[in-house]
Image (cartoon, rainbow, N blue to C red; front, side, top):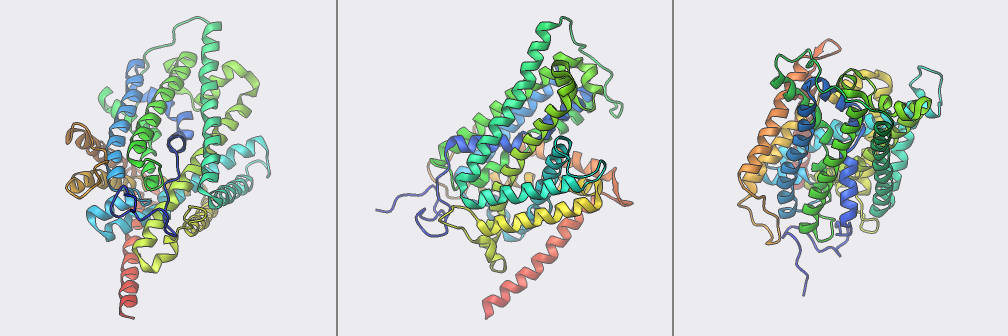
Length: 472
């Protein structure tokens, strides 16, 4: 008798070219932690301290960030266990809105959102490695570029070898990353034992806000961005052992751990520098570490940020290629992307193409400098638009057939409504931000529009090729 699958659409795991359920709960947890914890925790707490202007409000903001992320995770847990697929968000959007909308989402990911993130993170890694082991004269971007390209090639190659090779690498990087953050907390505890005094509890709220409420709202933008990435867990929903139970466990356990860690690190900054010190610091992690390790600060923090970047790069490479794989399965002209290597249990072609695209964007970053950073940042509204659509898809797909083991969001529809409202707020906030920015003298809002317009042109071409293939 053929064993039952988690969903009617999930093929028998023994078939050639099909994702197999080989990933363990621990691997899912370290992947999510690596996706979420990046260089943001070394920078964002300073902005959050200045925008809230009050110690209690600052800690509440980080706690709310964890709660909102957990609410979103519960929504994604239902989608991922009801419709497990390597395409993750792409698959949910395709089922709810059709292939065309899903294609635009997939295009945005492969053109800028995922590959751009890999390129930016690789440059962060390169910048900090250049401080530790310089490869080029001071002021030159050639050294960081070499480091960035090298790490993209190495991590892509590791993930091509076998899914567990990539996951073991991820587990190692995540462990080192968490140890680095614990070192900051431990250093703050040591500092406080050696020194007495009460840190300042209030500062003048950030000057760009007209009220404490608006300042808190802007602070939440930075908090939620620092918590971002847990949704990418949906891309391994078809590969996770005991999928329904372990997906829920992985999301809840990882986000809970991240929230506790973020609160501890924020406390470390506050107890060492005070609220005013946090708000005025441009290098908050370095300033905190300096109190304990003195002159070694720059090297220590450079190593911490470089390692955090490695964790995020590897995790993004793992999940990013899976949405490209799903696109390849849906569109015949992109069929090379939709090949799953059953021996390695990875989408090899999608990983290779993603790596090439990331290196190309890294080269663009070398040529354009900060302009490339801005280009990626200005596509945030596109990301939040599709994130909102994924949240709404939960309501649309609730009536679709699903396995009995699928998780159901508690307190439905209250929790999904909160999640969708949060996504809508972040969409509005990101739109407000880009409308106030410019890139090369052009309003930044056109960057996201351009990405979608190019996607529409490609969609038209691919549909025509698809139609021609059917006739032949």
